Length: 261
Image (cartoon, rainbow, N blue to C red; front, side, top):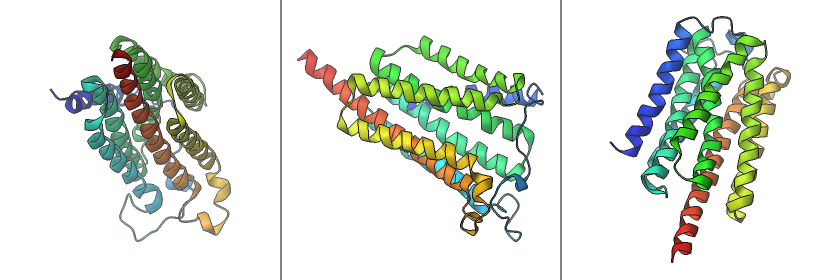
């Protein structure tokens, strides 16, 4: 089985477990924002159902396009089959996340909103996983433990009202700290640029999401709202993370080859 297909099976297996848990009713008590009125973007009544917030609906295509772009680029990834596998898992996660977000916007149903929140966590967790691959090589047992901890952290959403936000903050902080750490150990000027752009985009992702309602008081943000621009920043931070990690993968493999000569 190719690395791309194996990575797809990996992502689908995890996604299926999450879907089964959500539809079992375990997370019925989780607080989520539902209803189109929770978005600052003004509705367009004549648009088809699911597209009445066209900006926030269509921006999800960016995730799908970005995921597919890096799935194709992942075939060129250094590190052999294992390097391609790590890259492809990230690509499939991103592409699938776009579809889940589109389903949330279109349906405004609680299960879709829970999955939208939950799937955010392993995407951030995969950055430390890829960094560990760069530093320690192929250690699937450790990665499974990180993934399990990431998925399990969503249980905080059941424990406290802001549990998801707490879990997400921890994931964001961990991704940044580990990213800075791997840059310090094996990075160069090029990777530093991608890392800074990723962190800046992450700040935009968080800040614009929190300011969505406040920005909505200005006409400029009635169509392309703060939430929309937050998603644009999210797509950019994922893209820059790919550039950062892919560059370091090539540099690490190249450095190992030079040491062996």
